[in-house]
Amino acid sequence: MTDYIEDSPIKNKNRGGQPPNSIWEDINKGEAVGSGKFAASCKYCKNTWSRDKVSKLEEHLSNHCPDAPVAVVRRYMTKVMEQQVKSKSSKKKKYSEGQIKFFIACGIVFRIVEHLFFINFIKELNVRYNTPTREVLVNQLLERELAQVNFKVNSEFEKETNLTLAFDG
Image (tube, rainbow, N blue to C red):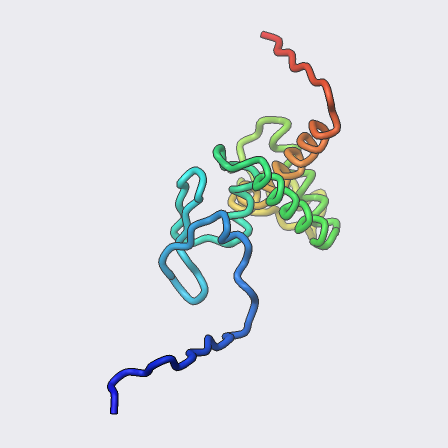
């Protein structure tokens, strides 16, 4: 009798569930930090995350990674835009989008959104609307708006054959 198995086919059992997200083609998966959660680092700019959502990693590749190839940026920019289109359109979403545009266009600091006077002002306008937190404003709404602007700018650039950029000042 032998102590080892010769030529026995070992079958890999399909564990089921969702297939791995395609984000792991462009992000290095680190050690497990929880059930289904992993540390990660960008393959292009070496930015690291101790634990984050896949949507945050996609936003990094679409909007913030300075070293990502154009094809990768475009792929994730499209993904982020598709997620926005799929999300339910509601009055609350429109209010929040208008609010982030207002804050950006007027140069207002985001911490104002949590100030009692601002909250009371918004409540006077619409009692049922709850203002988003500063974190939601910056981490979600600003990222969505940035993705939309980048997507529109890139699609305009793709249409052009000759382009001249001029800077004043």
